[in-house]
Every structure is written in structure tokens, then in C-alpha cells.
Length: 414
Image (cartoon, rainbow, N blue to C red; front, side, top):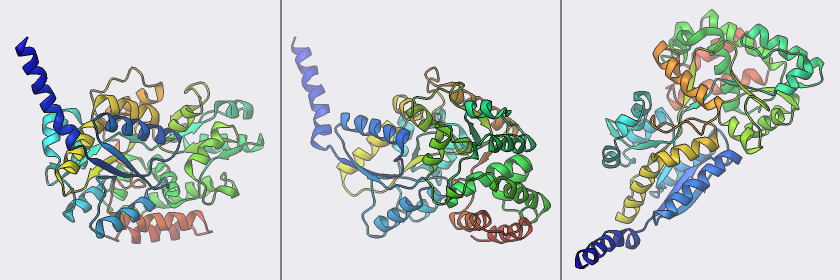
């Protein structure tokens, strides 16, 4: 009996610091649409259950540009948040500024190196040490399709660019907007990179948008990419300017549009609206990209905290984000697949299962490429310069040849 009492006392003593030193986690993110907001609410619940106070720092804008501006302001003022949604090379850039926290202790205790694909873990480290926790892996090169709209138009779901334009014409004749799109720079770049991958293949894509090879960027394949994009432009409605991505997705959900090029976060909108994959909507690889996978990894980079309570809360956050429970819940809501390889997939739908299978296949075949539109492939200054060229092309009568010359020039910006 005394031993049981002693054990209870020891347990209480170990739990006491968690109550006394309960900290606050302030997380800057741009997960503000339906499916994304659900995921954040779950993370808040899990953190509260650990005795940590969640302070939301949501900045609207799907591409994250507004959030990055807000983050810079906070870091410069010496008051960084606990964590921020940061991606790809930007993690390395913040690491070089000396403002990121080393979370290697959590990563080693939890065995992250064994749980993550190497392509993911490399992105999460700065100089060999973990500074960020991944929440998912998105596939960007999806085409979302409303099957009822296609049935009404008598159109075939496209796998090639000629088939895409044939389907777009049939949808147009049936009075259905062929392509839903939001005219924002990051959405224009998302569309462009799927066209580029479909026209040029993964070898061209890597040379042009990862290696920034000038001969490739300025070459005939890039001209062909812009020629294809010019034709795609003709199937976008005039009201696209400034439209948020989830509003474009809603056009496909309600049958006003037949298709949308968007990453798999769009699936979160379909499922939040009660739609079923394979019945109410289809997920297919963008034309010409069936053997490839453009990845976009969402992650929470951890910023250095001054006091012990904040540091402990930050460690709780890193551990929670990488837990099987959160990886499952977050990705079921958001439409992506877990970054953690051993997360069970039995609750996931066919789109997610296909995404995981395609990720595995593409990583073996050389078709796995980082999304430059989503800040995974190149320095932010280069990516911004390329986005500007693509948006100018989308919003003007610029010729494919001129656009190619300007894109190659943008590739020199570092």
C-alpha cells in the first residue's frame, strides 16, 4: 500500500512541472480556409490537453506572402512567435539568420530520422540539426474535375494536353466554365508549373526550376510551355483576377466550372462540403504528369524562445505535430498525406492513397520534384522574380518568346 502511495506521489511530482511551467505557443500560419481551419482547431485542442495555451496568429492569404511579411516584422522587433509556417529553402534562410531553435533533442527522442522520408527530413534541418517539424506532404500537380459537368458536356477526363483542350471546348459549348482559377501570383505560378512539368517532363523541370540552368530556361521547351499556357488562358473567366483559391475550388464543387489546377489542399474543400472522391469529384494528375509528383511540404519552423516555459511548450508543439494522431487528423482534414511514413492510411480516401503510392513511385523513377510555385525549389528572390514574369504573362498580351526571355533573366536573380 505504501509503495502505491509513493508511486502516486512520484507521479504527481513529475506532472507538477507541466502545470507550473505551462507555457504559451504562438503559431503564425495561413491555414484559414475550411479544411485547414479544422486542422488548426485540432492542434489547439491537443496543445491545450498538454497544459499549453494556444495563441493563434493566423494571417489570411493562401500563398503565405502576407504571413511572411508579418513574420519579418516580429523577428526584427525581437519578438518572434513560437513557430511559423515556413517552407523549403526559406527554412535555410531563417537558419542562416541565427533565429531558429534547435529541436534535435525532441527529434532524436522521437526517432524522426526513421519516420520521415529523406527528402522531407533534409528540408527540416539546418546544418544537420532539426529546426522545423513537418506536418504533411502535398502533391501540387493535381487536376480536380467535376464528373457531372463532364457528363453534361460529353467530355473525357484529360490525361494529355490535346485531351485537355478538347474537354475545355466541350465544356465551353455546354455553357460550363472550363477552368476555375484565381488570378493571384502564386496561383498563376501553380498553374504554370503543372503546364511546365506536363510539357517538358521532370528532366526539363529540374534543370529549369531547380538547377536554374540558363540554356534550359531560355530554350524552345520553355517557349512551348508559354504557348500552352497562352491557350489555357483562353478558358479562364474574366472574373478570375484576385479570386482566392478556395473560391475557385467552390466553382468546381457547385458545377459552375469543370476543372481546377491546384494542390491537394483543394480536396479539403471538397470533403468539407460533404463531397465524395470518385463520385462527386475526381483527382487526376495534371495533363502529361502522371509519372511525376511535385511536392510541397508544410512545416512549422521553431524560433528561439527566451524563457524555460516557452521552450518546453515549443518542445510539446514539435512532439505533437509529429505524433501519428495529429498527422492523421491534420491530413484527413487538409487533403494532403502524412509526412510521417508509419502513419496508418486506412482512414484516408482513394485520392490520398493514390498520392502516397505516386510519391513512392516518383521518388524511385526520378519524377519527384519540388514545387517552385510553393517555395520549395529555389531562393525566394528568384521565385518572386519568376512569379512576376508569369503573372505579367497571364495578365497581358506578352508573347511566349518574350516571356521566355524574361523568365530566363529572372532565373539569374538570387
